[in-house]
Image (tube, rainbow, N blue to C red; front, side, top):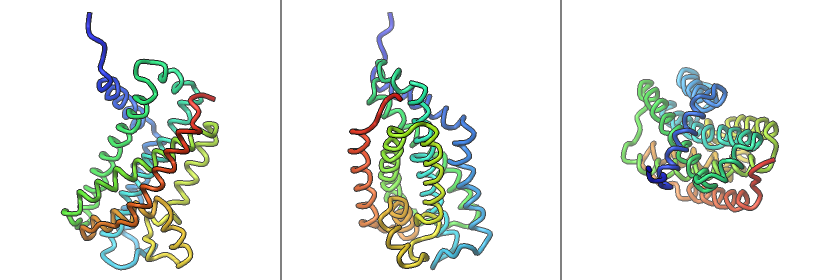
Length: 248
């Protein structure tokens, strides 16, 4: 008789399943990879919108990398979790040896897997278009990758645990568009009107993009941006833990 799988093996198996599900869903793949890739190419070959100082491609790529994290960790994860809850997948998996904690860890690892793929593709295209990242800032960028993933996965679970699947689908896509346009992601805050820039500075989207631009553009830490991400992650995690419903 074979020994039962260890918790680590169960989590990794669930992560592989979740990763396959995310990559196999055409709508989520569109939001997570195709649209960010289109945004990068569009920014590289146009002069609108204005992106402020610096080489346009060097400003654009970190913003698109931030958009990738938002797409995978928030939009795709919120939609997937919302429909999993609707069809009782979450409730059933929560009663298996995997457990609820294992399920959440599996989702988190799958999200990181999608983000690594996104960064490889977007980074490769960016390099082909002339992007010149500051390589010593890569470890800092990875810190923002993890912090941003935490904050946006927590926000995704908060949304998916409160609303019905159709509502999650509509709101997650609407929030994605709003953050893209007004969240300091593609257009840096320094290139936005004063009042809009001030509000955007309080959002996790702008904090993530600002941190990545500082890291990959000059190898610098943006401590204020990291603090904003951590505060959003902590608050969203605490609220989601109290309000999340595992079934409709």
